[in-house]
Image (cartoon, rainbow, N blue to C red; front, side):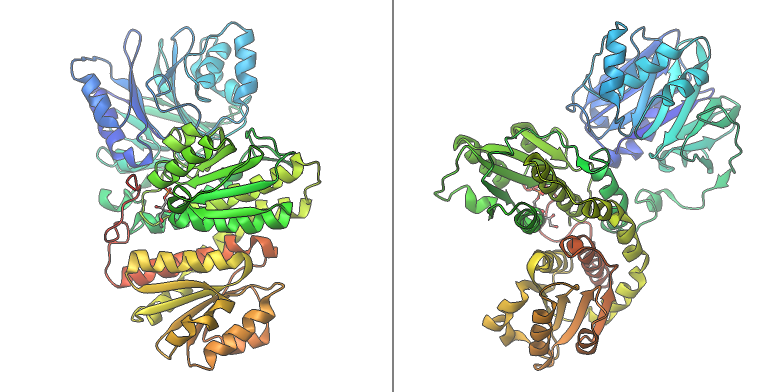
Length: 598
Ligand code: F6R
């Protein structure tokens, strides 16, 4: 999730670019760069945050008043200077900044290499600069339009040509907003950097291409057909829209989950086959060991249920902090999976290093590109969830379990078994079902209001929803500081039942499935002790309805996929309870986003 900016006007351009990038740094801080159009295209780019770029610009003077800039959240290629944007074309006539993923970049790259083009980065984005140049015959918008008709994937794009005083902007799948000013036009991934200069904006739609000159803008579809877009006046203030109108990053990230999950799936399902770039010997595989910490450990537990059911293979899950000091044996045909949003968690990294020293195959499921775990695993799956800023993990969790499901299906396929097309179809429509849950959040707000004064919560689930109970309890305790425990529902009678009384909310995760009747018995046991029951379910079972004090319904799905849907209401509930208690949800007490100490 990168940030792009462009300015064409009468002022020196660099201050517009740098200030704009600073406002979008939350979108990525792997590298930053600008290109100013003078007699030639002058590019300065640096790995790391905007501060590094500013240092590199200290002794530079520009006289141009047209330019583009970029702050990167790396997807393809490590976060270094070479992979930073803007990217120049082979003849240095064209500069491009890009936010998105070019899915057919390997094919396009081969085509360009055959034409003699030389590449200087490992990014998918660089192909765009060369491809546009290959179509250029004197009109930049025509060349961009032709190039984009050959591109599969997503983009928010800004393009310059050395001999034309204009910026071409285009969008598909990645946001892009035009800012309309006096004697100047701007373009950005977000409204925030525009607001210092104008509140008149145009939200580009998918497949729109805009031609910006100092006093004019023209918008057309990628195929050249002219379109009209309304100018809108932004009423918000900057502090609100830095979180895009959300009170906290956590809530924004909960809302982003349908899109984040689509990004994890994108390009990885082709018809009835799964395409993952992982390299381990799936045929010989006879055991899988997964380690992680915190929320990522919960997703590992869900992965265990997925893999045992789909692959009938033994799967062990361990806390990374325990695994690293345990005496254990791993064989060369074992697959060792580490899961980490940040890719920097110290215990997870140490567990990975231990597994490597024991000689087994390793695979990482990581969000942050180029992080230590991503670099040290032999192969991996990037989540493509975008930066997760809220300390409590939400969208990364959902994308981790998406990756684990894709991996289970890919191993099944590698073992020569057919993947059920029903499962694939259902997986692809889960983001819409998550959207439906989010659309019902008001009901969860009401529940949060009713339950906010409880001092203890119990979360109970069974089977693949047992880890969901653990995750629901962790979300609540970490952001609201209310004590909460998660248990397998049947374990309750071996101890936790002693805690149940009328003041104790018990959250049951109880979707339709083979053990629902057993959960109903556990509910009876809670009811007999006056516990208050909140049930997350997709079931119309009359007994369940009768035993529950509150019910939140989720859409129906296959039983194995229920965690994708049952987790989301628990995140929203925890968020609102914490917010109602006046806690800064994004910075919970004593916690840090990335735990790089033991
Ligand atoms: C809880 C949470 C933490 C992390 C844990 C591991 O909401 O975010 O429990 O899941 O610190 O972090 P990563 O996934 O970065 O290794």
